Image 1 (tube, one colour):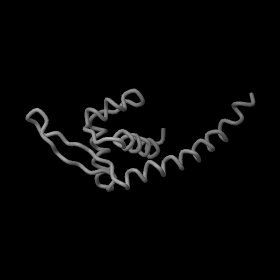
Image 2: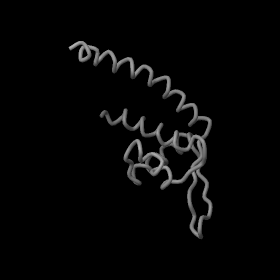
Image 3: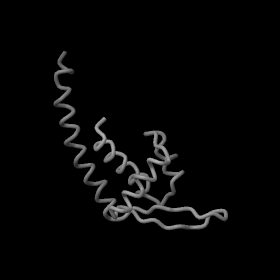
Image 4: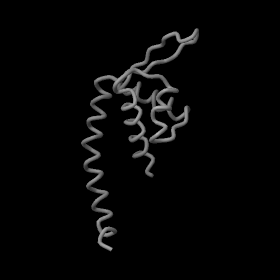
Length: 105
């Protein structure tokens, strides 16, 4: 898969994982595990990028004596999910065009 396309897909997946409630790294990986395999290093790179892009915010809170980072989606992050939904319709059309001949065989 094209690296840029995959990067965009992973970004939206992470945003979708925190769309309804704030979450932390391990839980995000666990929530996504049914759909995609994501390493901790990849996740934290994505989270940093999304934070830098203003699509999420981070807060630290104590959990059993240790600090845990919680991620919260911003309006910009929600807008990115909505943009993705629109873009995905176009990607589906392109896929259908490319595979059209496969279906006629």
